[in-house]
Length: 252
Image (tube, rainbow, N blue to C red; front, top):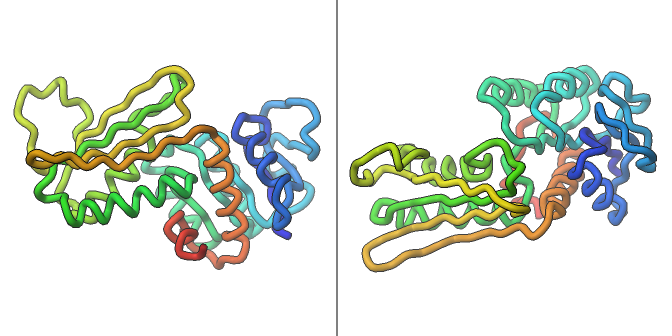
């Protein structure tokens, strides 16, 4: 049985993660971390990792990048594995995550959905076949409360495609400010914010007289929570290192 602490336990995603775990028989929640208090959660919630009375096997963090330093400090000092599922990390914070992975198991990806990560694999295959003859555009849609744009998932997809194409492409985010024809080595990035859209991503390969579109749509936040919990169970048995959904998919 894998023991889990949820960081951001009183947030929307924290509550969904607790619900997902309650329906599994291979893990359980022993505590939570959150600066906000929200009544009885069925487990004790603390304001800082250092207050945890019992070391969990894994911490799942779906809170905010500002929690990163405290989480890494605790995990490094106790040897605790951590699943980092927040979005909006800076390059410097990502560097700290990679450094920590030299000592503890760290699971880090821009999107916890199994479907999105399968989409990423399909996009890399499509780029290998079509990339140099087809123009590539990525369109992402999210709810009107999302702060960062483009989404971390869109960036992940663009980076995966670019790596497949020998990193010879560049992302273009602000096409309306450039009055010129599209360059062949561009990956167009477009963001839509509105309503309660959970998350939609389209990768468009536009060629001569034909268009191929790869799409993923999330109907609820549960798809991300389910992926994060699966990642936690997987990570509990891993040695120190940096893991992502590719590693999990290969283990399924």
